[in-house]
Amino acid sequence: MKKTINSVIRSLVLFMLIIMVSCNFSKTNSTSVPISYSATETQPSGSGQVSFYTPTNGSKDQSDKNQIFDFMINGVPADHNLLFFSLSKSDNLEGINFYSANTQTGDWNCLSCNLNLDKSNVSLQIRLPPGLSVDHQNLAIQGEVFEGTPDNNQFSGLWLVNLRKGGIRVIQSSNKFIGYSFPVWSPDDSKIASFTDDGHVNIINVSNGEQILPLNSVTQWKSETDQTDFDRPSMDLSWSPDGKYFIYNTLSAYPVRVNFNTLTARILSPFNNNKARIYFPAFSPAGTQILFSSDALNRNTGLSYDQWSLNPKISVYAFSATDLFIMNIDGNEEHCLTCGNVPGLVFAPSWSPDGKHIVFFDYDLSHFPDIFENIDVIDTDGANMRNLARFPSNGPGDYVDYKISGPPSWSVDGKQIAFSALNGGNQGIYVVNVDGSDLRLVVSQSGQDFVFPLWLDK
Image 1 (tube, helix red, strand yellow):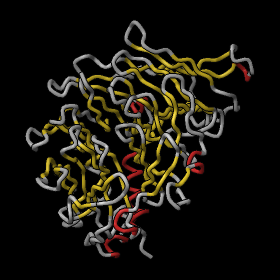
Image 2 (image 1 turned 90 degrees about the vertical axis):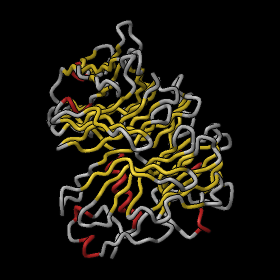
Image 3 (image 1 turned 120 degrees about the horizontal axis):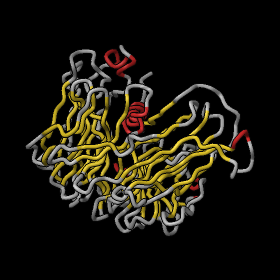
Image 4 (image 1 turned 90 degrees about the horizontal axis):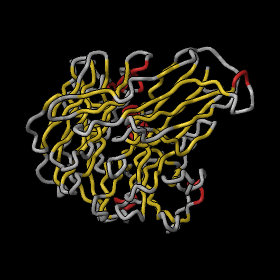
């Protein structure tokens, strides 16, 4: 009768980490015709755009085309060191905008508040989170365009944004909704891996858009051991620093490590294969360890089934708590970092650039029905765990008004952390030093939710 922790945590993670921002301008149906595009990159003005078209009057001649709209993103100002995104509370253009800020001065501006729409029945969708290149110069995003309803004419593509110079390049596209979720750059920025909506790993060459792995890739892995059942990917793809391996989590909550050179794979099974569920696997900066969270300790959150099931809004919370762990890259020699010091659920852990610290956020359920959401840092040996920010609920019953949204982000020098959290009724962007000092709100605006901050290298 009880739901498994796998299903409830996956529901919560997907709610927080996959956000499809949609601008729907009409619900009018239209005749199904292909959508084409043209794109410009690195313009002298410091901006570039992608323009979308449909053939005029249903013509099959692509040269006879009717422009739908232009989508433009300007370059990030030279003195800005943070990128973030907006989620509108209403169905308007603000739902797809990109922003940048200077975290020292508080200056911020919009990079994309100039959508030129010429037809009233067009929708543009952008999936978050995006993928920031290792050199911090480019951003990979999934964009989808359709007229009328998604079942009609469609355009789905993986777009690259030149962050400093401005401009958009479409490097992979389809007239079907394939999906390119969770794009992650390889360590040398030559490849991008993403997940397709039908459950496969998609890897492409950045320079020419060539598809390196087939869209049915998961069914073609060769097992390094006697394992044969590689489940569909769910999220959390991570490259090893040398580019030899990538690891991803599955719908069944176990990680699969793939040798990119040989396309051989193995399921990583710490804890002596006791079926413990694994979440958020990520290679260390040195490539010798893998960070993850798990319910392996079988700790109870303290919630009874009645508490958990009274209100469907709190169905995202589970009975079993999760902790942070580290294992070697073969899935052995696991050891616990938090070891019961977090009375609830641990999410979105991330290595510091030097590999000495880990930031994560957690839900403290020990005061239920009050829930506290925290940003914490811990050393990689499990010592010196410290709280950087704590956000209480607004009182009993405030279960799903998430205070912290999306994963925290390390600054390039590893001295600061940025994250999105509620400020009044809206999500704002906060910055805090890694020692917990100087917590401050950098960006907030009434009527806007700002999310997914990403540090840039000036």
